[in-house]
Image (cartoon, rainbow, N blue to C red; front, top):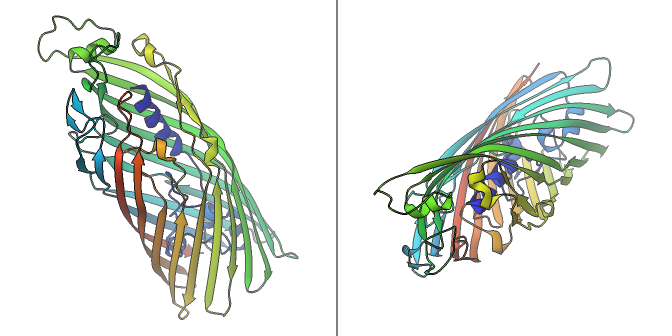
Length: 453
């Protein structure tokens, strides 16, 4: 149970991350339809209020008042797995060797965004404010799946607030900006619990997969970080962008509720498991808390306009996932004493993402866009699991912008293909991991309305 709660709280933590790119892992950088249509290569253009997410220095060049309203629809990938897990087979003694084929449940997540900028008339100063859902993710497997002891439902509902101030040095054609990120996240997760021994308080053979009960967790976390950006236009056809967001530490507090459904499950929380009537159940609860380091991100970008109508951009982003080394959990209830303050190593690695985008201004009202990005997965083979069957990603996007001097409607579509992820980390002692192959794809739709006053 401790290991699963670690994953739960990891999800809570990552919902608070403020990233500038797609970046694999849990990061979702599709925070504007215009940028998404160009593969999220936008930190050097940054020419609408969604720049607050990609490169806040971009708002220094936006005139007047501009408001950007949008929504992102994520068709959560229906992950397919083929292989073995600690529960594949017939529990409790004949597990871990039978090959299974599983599909996660489909889901659709809608993430709204709001960005606004206000430029002063008398000074080259601009103020911005953004509200978005940086990690609106959902993952669920059937209650009877071979992963039911690792995850059944994982639902994350975050909201991020970003106040920003930007200044423009007209002589240098340079914009600078700084802001803070305040992220609040809610998480709800559910799973079944199993033990490798029939009496968790006195481990002894026979070893297998013995049902304990079910566990539900609800948690919240809030933290504050900072960000800054630079946007330089040394020539009329060239933009250079730099954006950075700090590492922060997200404090997680939540409630863990455990329902024992078998005598073995009652023994796990210290209750007598002898002479129990059939179908007797017992409930235990506890407060849970931990501290999670969230990685910093650095984005470097260049945009070039070889002709008046064509804009090309390339972005490279490093995410410092190597700061996510372990989790250490604290439980208040004595019934959870066996799990208290135990370390769960993660040992993620830094990841890079590379993004290419293009826009062709067909006429004054219509712009056509396309993009591609490649994202490295930060998750090493030994910690890949059904909660995050992550892999390197290829993303392909197209879109268009239609508008005039008063406003623009931007539309985008993206297909995200996860490279097949082969894992060999099945652990029959901890009843975690799997030996097999994960396959996933995701489909994203975005629409934004950008108004100018």
